[in-house]
Every structure is written in structure tokens, then in C-alpha cells.
Image (cartoon, rainbow, N blue to C red; front, side, top):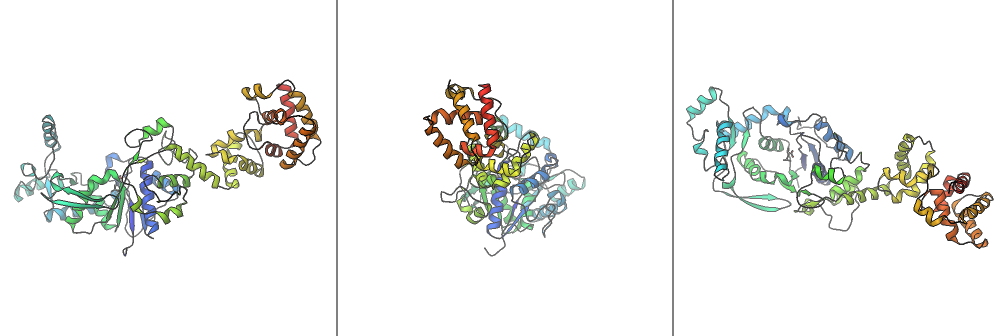
Length: 498
Ligand code: GLU
């Protein structure tokens, strides 16, 4: 590639970024960085009716949180700004006009009422109304009217739109990096509106003009835009511009059943589908996902590295990513797998970082503990955790004595002679000077054999009274951490209570 790679992510600020949108942004980012190119954010806000306040800020915050910031975009002006289409609106009309002059587009005066009438009429006959070559001469436009009539209408201030004049009887070949060649008969295309009566361009015109002016070399976007590819390719031809390369990413499918992933699937399955919380919908960030994990699982949603490797840092993704390895078919969204990715990434975090995150939860619970202690706790339980929010349940007994004991375990482990044995354990523990895990273990085990007791009589009830349950890491590690006094006190409490 001789030309500098430039890609863009071009969301419409009509709401929060869905996880599919974030994946589109990610693939653009990976491709740009792999080729030393630029990743542009362009906000496509020409449809003022669908504009949602706060959506643009949300999109930017989501990209930043994910660790895939844009190089140029709103607030980061480069050489091709402004990057919001609403701030570029004065430039589109001339391009629409240019196509009219070249005979590639035309003025159309049909009112919305007339068009609605045609639509209904067709529907009642079981047909679909398409405005194109087969009927355009019967409709009210600059192809069917004389120049004078057209002038008169425009001068009288009549509303008009500018429509693209789709070619007749042409077989065209579209190219997509992921899907290969796609053959289209232009007769199936309709004459799409390029410029609206409100003085604003439609998505199609603004998108093409901006991709051209912003020197975009590769358009990487969702499969839902594939039906627009024919029009876009024809528009590039009509302007006489070189088209960028196109890649349409596969849809993200529901965890089960048919169809694409929706907000409702998240609600039903109890998993986020937005990167950050939006209104009532919890985001990945707030659910405790690490951005590295989100980026990692999104990358493998529709792309494969061609190896068994599953865990990738962002740099490794940049290194391995190619559009050729993006799949054509839909990618099934697997919330379990997403949790697994978070579990994997959690293990990669340092104990210090995890302890820092956990500490704020502990503070909220009114527990004030040394960071050092929290780090040791985290280190002994993190293996079992997928989220920092799992920590408390896995480690509460490190911070407070059990307030109750698991009933089933009590029935099984707490026998008639257990209080007596536990009393002896206390007496023995009191003699210990060095309360370090390996040392306690060795001495307790020797003591058990000398007393002629079995491990089963001592160890399970001991765990039960220290932890309140049969769970947790190595028991002597727990005892070392909570200390001699606390260990003994917990055994005493249990003898009293049970
Ligand atoms: N504004 C379009 C969207 O909301 C952009 C599609 C494209 O990338 O061409 O997705």
C-alpha cells in the first residue's frame, strides 16, 4: 500500500454505542494501527430527527475507555475537519448539483403524499413501489419535465429532492475484501434520494463525499450496509473518484436462536451490550469488565487468528489482524465466554492493582485494612474470580469472623467429640510461636498423628469454624493471614455456638 491508510468509524449519534458498533470501531482501529495509518471518528449527524443528546460524548468516552482512541475527530482536529457532518452541511449541496449537471442525478418534485399514494396503491396489488428507471418518466422530475417547467417549479419555491439516476441494464461487480465479488443488476436498484428538501444531504451522499474528502482508503463497517454498496460504488463512478476498498463485517448473533443480538437479549440474559452504562442499561465497564477483556473477546467475534491463541493484548491484535481472516458468516455472541475472558485478564493483573480496586469496596463496607493484607488476600483467591466484584464473596472470612455456619457442613462435620477435639487444637495452637502457613501445617499434622486422631476429625471442622463453610484456599494460608489470635478466637466462638 503506497497511500497512507486512513479509516473511519462513522456512527450516527442516535443513542449509545452498541457492542457491535464498538467492534466495528475496533476492527477499524486494528487495521489502521497495523498499517501505520489514521483512525478517524466522523459523526454522522445529518438526521436531526434522530439526534440524541449525549450520544456523541458517550461514543467518545466508550472508545477512550476501550483503549482505542481516534487520531482525528471532534475535539481532535486534523487536516480534514470538521468531523461532524452537521458542521459540514454547506458543502454537500454543490456535490449533489454536480451530479445533476453531469446527468447522473435529477430533481424530483413528487410530494410525500403522492409517493405515499403510489406506495399504498402498489401494496394493495401485492407489489412494491420502487422509484427507478421503469417509472421515473411517469413521475414528476427533471427527467420527465422540460427545463422551463423545472425552472418554474424551483423559482416558485417548490420543494424538491435530488435523486440518483441509477443506470439501466448494467451488470456491475462490487468488491468486498471479506466477501469477494458481488454481482448486481442495476435494474433492481432504486433512485435513492441524495439531497433532501430540508437542505440536508442523505446518509449516502454525505458519507461518500466525506470519505472522499477525508481521503479514506478503507471502509470497514457492519454487514447492514452491504445493500448500500452498489449505490456507493456507482456514486464514486459518477463523481469520477477512486472508491476506497470495502469490508463488511459479519453480524453479531444472539447467544441462542436466530437473529442479531439485541438490547433485549442482554436484558433477558443479564449481560451488558453497551460498553458503558446508558440510562438503565448497565455497561461492560460498570459490570466490572476490564477493557482489555472486552477488546479481546470483541476481536474474536468474527475474526480468527488462524491459530489456537485466544488471549491477545491490543498490541498482539494489531500485529495479527487482517481483514482476510474476518469471517463472512454471523458471529455468535457468547456471554459465558466473555466472562471467561475477564477471568483470564483478571489473572494477568497485579495483586497490587486488584487490591486497589477491591479496597474501595471494602471501604464501602466499613472495613479498614492495610493494603498489604488486601494484596495477600487477593493473591490467594483471585484464581477463582472472574470479576473484582466476586472477591468479597470469596474472601469475606479474611476480614470478619463467620457470623453463621453452613448447615449442611455442620451436620456432616460437627460430631459429638468435635468440641473436645477443637479445644485441644486451641491448646496446641497456643503453643505455636511461628504462625507461618507451612510451619503451622507441619506441626499440626505431626500433632494430629501423635494424638492418634485422623485428619478427617480435625481438618474439615477446623475449616468450617475458620471460614464458616467448606470453601476457600489452603486452610493454613488463611490461618496465617488472619493470625493466631483470630484463629483461636474463631474456634472458641464455634465451640460456644455449635
Ligand atoms: N452513519 C452510519 C452508521 O450509523 C455509517 C455507516 C458507514 O460506516 O458507512 O453506521
